[in-house]
Length: 403
Image (cartoon, rainbow, N blue to C red; front, top):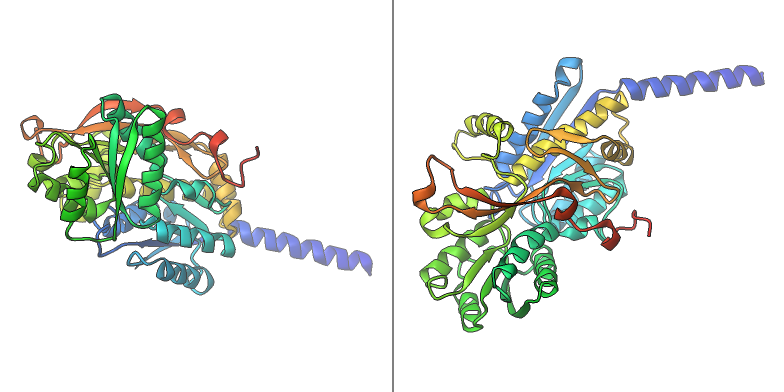
């Protein structure tokens, strides 16, 4: 009798294992700002990037069923968390991708951990996502506030910009970017003389720019993003701030911001990015396909590139597992185990804290006379090696990192 029960149990376990191995059904959710101030750098373009990664993975041709859905979190953390719970619990989404806005990302990463789902973030910047808020269910792909500060902040201090005033988006992202940049400025002999916190999606920056102007700081650090960056740079140009001798540090600038500003206004800006559409043959080939399908003839941002690359690597991990285990921590562990390699970021790794490691690049926006064709906006100043671009593990607050 015991032998019969044991045989039945073993058969059941084998069938269950086989079922998991043969489960080739995947559901992806692209959760983003689809209509607000961050829509140009993520939004519909990120949805396209995820769909292109699914197509380029080749898994559908191998019998996999992969669906992509999307939603707009409207830059509201509570709404983002509610959508994430609905997706994991009811809609059986396996991975959430995108989630620009650090406040919404911090909310979603907590839900992903709770529900044992997967969260692939390329849009939110806060380095806390792989610091004190890190968990075993999340990967942070394209960039973060530490990398931005380590690139742009350090470069401008070394050029003589040793006094800073920050205009800061008043939520998790802005505060993290000011914090990380201030640390770099001070470590390199500079000082922070003041700051102004600005509500998200502010149309009028005049009072904040006047504070920055009167501070006499050599550098005005714009710790904001998306439409806020575009508006603050435009208004700084109207105030003649750069002509008056102060330098603007647009700490998170996407190519969509530069395009919206135009080279007459944006020329000379120093910025840090981990992706540029015109870097090499691989980035150009992807960007050509992406741009043709967007029909707006825009070029992809590093967020949209990160959404493509992280989705592609996620699908490679599922294939390596032989099927979808519907176990987020197990899939993320496999993603960390496998070396990364894609045409947009090249070869890289994913650390224990979930931080994707690759080079970062310091660019300067070209003068109009230097631009030779549409979207020819950046010239490369320096390459920051992968092992220097992001916060060292020895400084990490991530609970997954053994001290």
